[in-house]
Image (tube, rainbow, N blue to C red):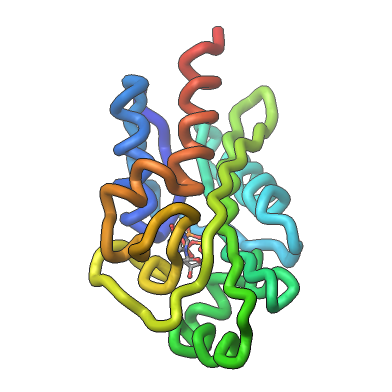
Length: 183
Ligand code: ITT
């Protein structure tokens, strides 16, 4: 089964396909932009994005929105993670946490799927902490500063570990299970 995935980020498509291959689901990248609404909840951002793209292309489509929620910063940057990453990057986040003992953080991924029956949301979450310094060359975005719970390395140091436990894996697993079980 082939499903369109509207995203500008090819890393997301590769990670989704690592999950999809276990379910016979293949994701194809669709370079279709959509407005990211201002909402603190990544699920609502994904929901609005999926509806927007579906209405435009009239084909079933997936979009995904991810946020990094840092406890000591009251959940910042959250659903504003893309904007914050562009503005201050990983070094900016490390700077904001310089004096902080509490390094707890979580990634939340929301996959939105829209077809003529409407939109559905599938969430995945991984708990972890923000490293003291950026490490690793794999992955993208905040991967060099995120250490998942129970691990000693960042997502960027161990992409296989990331693929096994990430927020995205968890959200796409839920989606794939649902989509192949439907009908
Ligand atoms: P699209 O919106 O086009 O899908 P994007 O990269 O802008 O691609 P998001 O808005 O979901 O995706 O991402 C928010 C930010 O969080 C952005 O800066 C990403 O680089 C970063 N991000 C998303 N998923 C991540 C992951 O698995 N690991 C590290 N950083 C991630």
